[in-house]
Length: 114
Length: 113
Image (cartoon, rainbow over all chains, first blue to last red):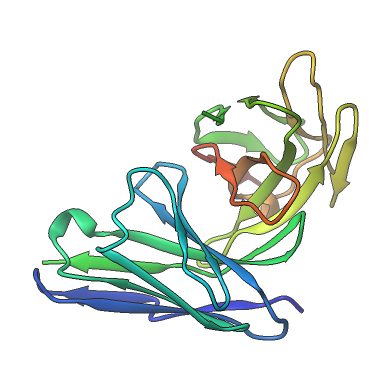
């Protein structure tokens, strides 16, 4: 149980375009989901906390107008990278909260902006 | 702010060797501590956790003890197997609710037969 999926697993886009990444909890409902970003050989950095039916909470330094998060249902959160640039190329990982001490992670999405 | 420091790899060991991966943290208050494991091509999986000082988390032969006096949460296993090869992340959660995690950089463990 407690499976989280992400789609797509890998996306290449041109500079200036927008890309949407989906995060789904497949077998449980998650009122809270999290978005992380991981650079090569670096740790995961929390970008934002996504709560179903309300606005996301962004970490300091994360541009909320660039990284749009929508948590429209208890099983789906989306991250849209708007007007992507090469520096946005990274590995984006979501997780879904299953309780105060449990987070279930998706396999990640690799974004390459050319 | 909160931070987690763990030994960087890769760490290469022979099968049946003893494993220690060091992890120390900086946090205000009383965080919960976690070890996650990431196998190739898969998402992070919770390996073990400890929610208060002196707690010992254990799973699949791995253990870690929450040491508040040394702000540490070192991961240990008495006899590693080839199947333990993966990337291990130490992490903390500062709050009591559904908060995001602060991760270390990860340690790549390679076990040779």
